Length: 616
Image (cartoon, rainbow, N blue to C red; front, side, top):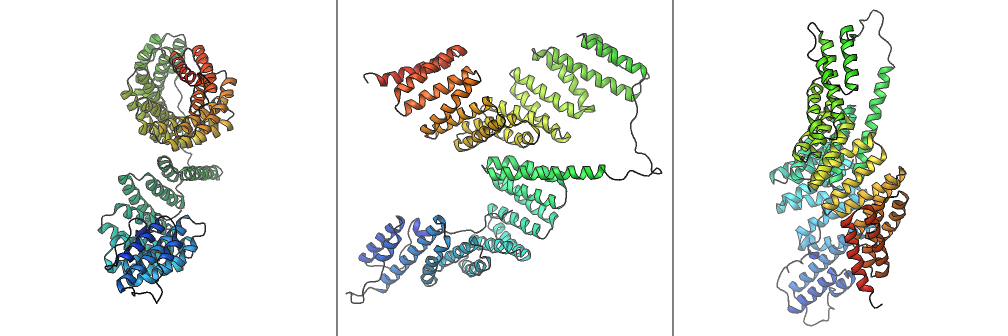
């Protein structure tokens, strides 16, 4: 795990606005410095420094002290900007160091504030080259300068940098000391982001000392601050830190729970590597749990003198068994009323165990009754609710399934509010009973409802929560479908890049699962988002790949959509004759599929494309 927000950098002020002259300059010097600054902003550093060279000694009149200092200050600014550029955009950031040193030699005297920034950035550059001890030396020079200026924020940032260098040197005690100083300052100046960063880094340092309980405390505080700030990536990192600590404590169930919470947050932050890391950690923790279970199973059996474990060996009495058999025969013949009357109330003198068996049978009967009238959800709903009342008490896992069916019924009846409430209850109950399949199903349905209600952020959140569960136990095609739905939500949120990433993952999953229909749908969606990104040629390629796949699957509507979009892409590329051909075929397929709105849209595109071909 990496320290967060390590190596705070300060950009050269010149690149943004230019520094005010130290003293009054002559007009000629001021104009020369202005031209040099223009060169710097354009990246012409050599030309800028050439302009700023001091005039020859024989020049008349001799430059004033103010002009000389202004030139030197401008030289320092140019060297600083050049160094920043090399550090940020060069494959060899160490080439920035001579320019930082040249700027520092001037600014130590003329501009101590900028000298502090340069020292920090030299330290950061060394830090990035894994020269941690050298970096600490430069950070240590910057620190007193910031303190003398009263710049608390930069003082705390440099302390964080020092702590991170010590962390990389595995000197955890010193790292903790620096992070604690930084934390105190962030709290004094009410910098919640800095506070969260320092707490997270304290968690990492205490992990290094194997003080797992302390680390969990720091990570939890960081996660809370990140959540309050809406920093999904930061919260995900903190939750991953908690999972790492629980792993050290061999509490693998809590490891899985921590990374399961982190996974959707990484998705919100667009951190694909974070998602992959969370999935990998959950897989490892599950394997550790399985290994422990196998070890327990292979442990020696208890001795003969040891008391046997208590086992419920009760079976239904003969009279109860007779009731259950008769009732089942009746409801299998769709005689539900007679079966229900037979099962309740239980006969006088029925044992508690037999009474429970009869109640379970009533719930099973209500499920069968609901299934028999399933096409009329209004009729099925009371039976599902009757079953739920029993299953909540006796079969919590089945109760979660009941809630999914109840929610789906409300959805079909056009009552999305009640459907959402039931799905949310199903998710909560599934989590308590470790019913991953029901939880994934409920979250997927929640996403669909939120999409239908145009609540795209909530839809994306629901799909993100369902993905690790589906990845764990669901078929690959289900994961592909969920990636598709998540992509749709992102597309509706105008987060086109994230949508594209989802569709690319969907495409890979569909191909691995050898699902031609899923592959075609992913290609179609990739064409749409490429078009939205202005990549018309790329969109064209995706549509061309999708078309034969839809044809192989005899999917007329899919073919129509691909041809319709091909027509749009050809029009965008001014290839109107091809557009005419695509729109004509699209209209035909829409007509065969009974999609009158699609047919009208294709005919409208056909008419427009023909207008461009007239007279050619």
